[in-house]
Image (tube, rainbow, N blue to C red):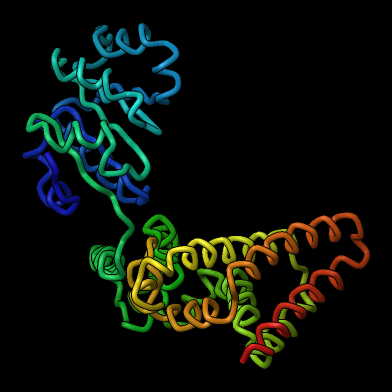
Length: 339
């Protein structure tokens, strides 16, 4: 049986009669939230619930021990929660056996990455009325906004729209990142009910990682003036060059992944709107510009050059900063020549 994530979050108690729950998709933060909600509700009747976490590979290699963990009694609690991590179609037959025997007081979380429509495991959970299947796709901006508002409301903290937008942008579409930043603000605001935007920027370290991210974006867009301004601020500071190269590599890999799907959509706008994880609305114009400037072949070439630059920096530590910035200057100059 398929259910939406908001249904189980809104009223988890009515779903406790289902003892098998498949959570699949890219949103690990949402899976974590659903797990916690269910566990909290189960703990209301038995605070000593036993929790067993297993990898699918271990289950496949030691099936006997897996079934023993299900059906053997517990010395300290009546209930068990068994979490199966990194599940794939390989576990399907074992799940069928569990459904048949329906063990009492044992609740199963089956956690999987993205499963295709033809997946045996996904199909089993979608078509069987006795078990639950919840797709966990990436959060929308609205989801992140709701999480932020609720957290601040619970703590009686005043929240401006500017601050809300800033936090969502910083989260990069990830509710775990968002909650980390919210926790920092909650600790800072213990004796304050209104926080200024500049205080928030200092709390969540916008001057560091945020500038590195901007540097790479401006570089890939060929925005020379903005790129040089950020570069001048960073050059005098100690920079982890390998870390910045990895950020650049991740960005290029994402552009590559998006660009490969271009032929399946009617233009860049429809492609960007369909991209998962979703692209933050403020970032879309910049990503669109980067996709326009760089071809697939050029993006692949940059990936190779990043790897070579990292090796050069490690072999030549005394001039690593020079090697590093010359590499980014070359990319920015090439992007600018396209304009």
